[in-house]
Image (cartoon, rainbow, N blue to C red):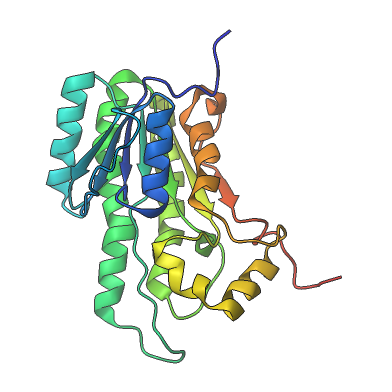
Length: 254
């Protein structure tokens, strides 16, 4: 019997694969038989990965033509692109409250977190439509639902990415292309290492989850495999929050 959750031999492109969540997902997919192209501006050094299925490709995803050329090469080689995971992202918060947010930080964050995902999605949609199938997974955030302090560009970009996914799901569902969003809560990565190291903040955030802990990049692997596989073949335009129950938690405590 076929394994509905199999991602074996799927051609997968993952942006932001140089570190953090993107790097963990890239290795996990490759270990499970996918042929993975991990795209990042900073390509990590190979340190004895156990699989030859993972290739790192240096690319600035904000450069539309550069990413499209990569897609063209991948499609020419494999005759298909099965999955795109838009994981590239940055966060540039103000350090103190009640500060005017710098315009430069706004433009840079929107460009990386939202505009680049638009470029990348359009590039792979053009290829996926040829085979009438494909899965795009956007890594959004709980910030796509909740307003958090001192970081308007991040909140706006993740909210925009969420709705971009729904828009593409609407436009391309008839071509067999599914688009879904995965929203992480607080995940221990290089991006969050400073707040994780702050015992007070770390504890406050743990206490707000229903599971009483921070997440790890590995917690995103299962949901990504699900949405990349045939097990989710009737799911599109949806949001899955991997947040330990943060968004479900109420203000009332027992």
